[in-house]
Amino acid sequence: MAILVTGGAGYIGSHMVHELSDAGQPVVVLDNLSTGFRFLLPASVPVVVGNTGDQDLVAKTIADHRVDAIIHFAASVVVPESISDPLGYYRNNTLNTALLLQAAIAGGVRQFIFSSTAAVYGNPASVPVRENAATNPISPYGTSKLMSEIILRDAARAQGLRFVVLRYFNVAGADPKGRTGQSTPQATHLIKVAVETVLGKRETMSVFGTDYPTPDGTCIRDYIHVSDLARAHSAALAYLRRGGDSATFNCGYGHGHSVMEVLEAVRRVSGRNFPVGFTDRRPGDPAALVADVSRIQSVLDWRPIYDDLGTIVTHALAWERRLAAKQSAR
Image (cartoon, rainbow, N blue to C red; front, top):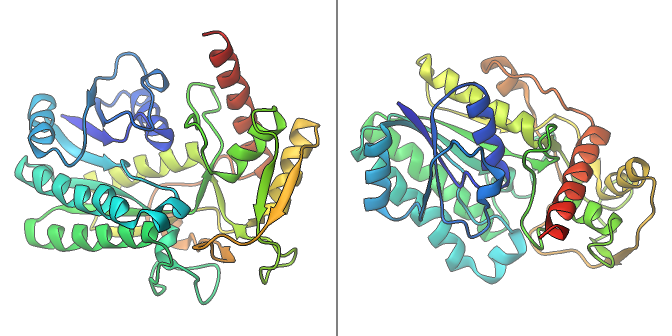
């Protein structure tokens, strides 16, 4: 039996594939390669090129590889883009998730892990935010993910599927072994953008908003190392395989850093200064998002290993240098 990882050639998905492969678990990837890359994956892992909304392809993949569990990462993830293209986000994130679920249930899959987001909370009334907090997304991206959660819950109740929803806070860093990392051109992740600017890949970077109700006026986020996040998925899968009930968990560290604190960490780790501009707030950005992680730590067999901003930045910078060397060698 194999685990199907959708979006497995992308940033988080590729870390998941390495996590599973390192543990000796059979895995197959489904990815349309629009933002993913085959070179991020172990050569031994089969890759099916296509979309999660292609039900015939999904059904064939499940049957051919005897898939019994799905970890679903494939999605569009840029908040400002979702505001300008909401229908594209509802199609790719919500509709395709529904189609994937339909094919999965028909194919006998009974365990499903869904990649969700803290954006479902919108501007939470209090932080750290718990899983039972009100969901009030302020971007089509967050809404598309919340709608997918609801579809998953309803389908699971009707069909006997068991699932785990993992609501990510801000994912950052790269594989400590240097095998994979964030590789999408023009990515919008803060730490990715900052280390690209340090290395001269960007002339400057922008800070969006310095008038938030936070100590230094910039947004505060809970940054989780991508490898810790992959381990959380493994813990969620083990939980389901032990017979655990369907559940939703926040994935973060339970403390936040402001944009200015992140930039200072990048300067400290790299030993370099870099140009930064300041501009207005972006639509869809809440002032602060920090996870309450008591549930995931009490229910799942998971504790973070890389809970340190300097470590996260160090791994991100090392990957960016490796990626630059790879690109210059072409």
